[in-house]
Length: 470
Image 1 (cartoon, one colour):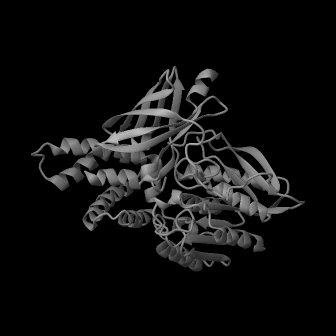
Image 2: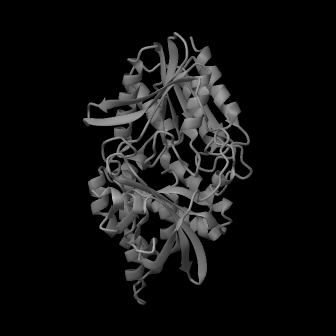
Image 3: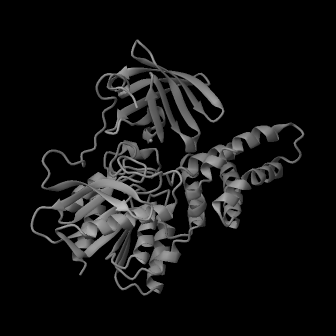
């Protein structure tokens, strides 16, 4: 059953009306211990109220070096708190008690554990993020909104414009997989905040925005695919191009991870895109990229070769099944039958009744095989990369375990050469990870531990390259 558990984790790599008095009672940081098989696991839950009276929340598991994991659903009414991450089959629910504690049940899959949390006074932890801008900023900062006219949803973000007359070159930042805010906040880092600050200080206007259904943006994230996110990015590009002080002939799109896949999708459809920056962007077919990601991340976790092979075999079966299904609806409808075939193939006849147990856990795949993932696993980056005629910058980290530089950088280079793109640069920073941090191993566990949010040399290369475009 380990292979089922692993896929739920690995697929997530490449991936939130009450009275004011109640609001004050629940907002803040809460800490306690989850007892699993006799071992205590520290859990911190952070709850914040939004301007529209809704709630957002994250949780930390410091013992597992996981910080700022966002809940996709948070409600609080009549002293009852409910939080969840449907893709992880994680649900937390319970009551705010009179003694200012939370009495909760923590449910993950079929397992349920009691959890009592107490309020943390002041900051829940101390992290150093020296690259985040502080104080009075030497550029204009505007809170903006724009509309994706295809889906009729309003997206909100932040536009930073250098001081001076302009016109300035400009770029839209597109986030990677999973619901992310305009700062692309992850593991207590805010990469897009740091990158936008750096670029704007160097004379480049930047628009960053909340993903649909996230932060202050409208829309529903969980039913969207990369095509929908590309439409959002295109709306952001069109909005940015029309702003005062912007050089309309020098407006581009920069995307990280899946955002580095979406940027070329937009550029092939919108001929006004002046340049594309791919930061750890996929160039391999996505299923091939995922096989590499699975092996590299499992090796970094010191998983045995046998378990790695079992995981790869299962993923190979799943990916082939999804690629054979022409639509998500057909893939979802046949998923139970697929699971049954796989389990029986591994265990033979159901003489011990194990099939029922394994199949019950395997059905968790329904929460993983979403419209987004069906589209994603079938995607061929070459289908858009080979049509890029505008300047392209591709940056990779040599210690990236999620989008392997050795293969993706070389494939991108070959595609752009064969398509006779006249202005492009593909570069690998040997010691950077997937988040473009200076890393030791590149493992996900390091992300939060590293003080650096975004390597300055990488940001400098992006700025210099944009500024030198004619």
